[in-house]
Image (cartoon, rainbow, N blue to C red; front, side):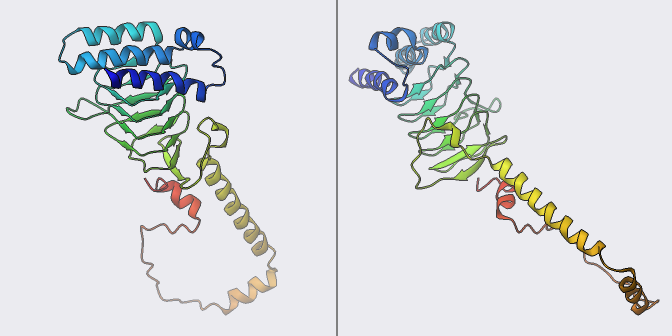
Length: 257
């Protein structure tokens, strides 16, 4: 019981720390669906582990009806978790959410099929999951990970990383402290790859233009110097694509995941 009240207090306090719109305790208590959903979930979770039938799921269903947030009673939620706005959030039965996680609306912590046992993701501490992001399967998401809005994460993510894109790709930010609310500075790996490809195309076009400026006389001399009968050359085929640009290589390889 002491742990329950400690978690509820941390859930209540974190809202003032992370939401500048939170003005007073009365407004937070009655007008924040994320807090209400967590309060009802913690009661349902306690009853769920007491093996009480039906009632935990009923409480979860009532919470879903009132807040638009669906949390299975079996999910384990750490303390100080903040579900901002929250409409459309779905957290599966075997999901684990670490302390002080920040979850925005439309997030799904779900499974990928009808597997038994642990089939939902595990989030570490201080994880930020942006609006509309999907984390699917029995994945391990490390501490201090930031998942960009709209990303779809299908593989494990190490600690201190940022995930963006579909499917989610990691850009390492280890050792750099970032404001969890500062979504405007998430790296755009797709834009970086497109920019690298455009630079390469421009370089190739410059080389083609230089070759086109070669005089016809020079071309004629080259043609005359080439023997008319050349031995057949056998070119060894290879399936390896040599990529020199590290940005492109990391993007195609999932940037480490």
